[in-house]
Image 1 (tube, rainbow, N blue to C red):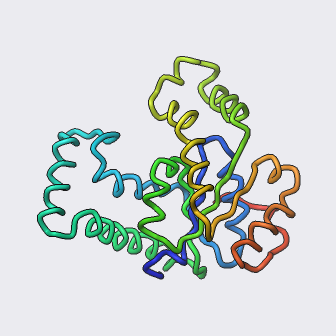
Image 2 (spheres, rainbow, N blue to C red):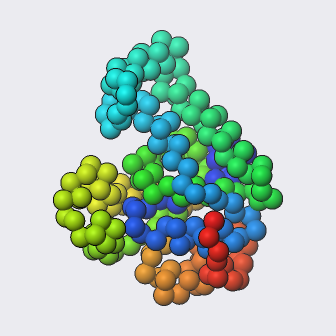
Length: 216
């Protein structure tokens, strides 16, 4: 794998935005391999964050200890990012080694929490930003929790509804290269045209029939 992430594609969105549908379609491309949500970049990148992580051990003390440690090595955050890059490349490489494809698509919706960090780790990675009407996202979440509004009090649900849109909008505005934006409504209405435009943006071969997909 390219150390700067040229072989990686990140699908960034809020949950309930249709990311599984788009993942299944792109999985049919002869160059793109994907697996169910990996999640591991959240664990790796939250290691240096002073909040947002809980564990059986004292996560706050662990973060302080790690920060002190990497500072003592004189590498600081850059040293840690380098280590995260090496670990991620090993995990992504293991996935690709069992396929005949050369690009890996990581579809983990809550990566919107670390999208700017992902760009730091892999500056040459491709990013797909999948957008859906926020009211439709809310309706889908409520359907998932069977209409129980109290379930929205969970911090992860609050982030999905409030943090995700702002983080994604900021990334779209600041990531000026190797990115593409897809609207869920357009994907459902005209999947072939939407996929063709996406592949063209990423300079990938336009493959017909991707909208007829099978589950990963």
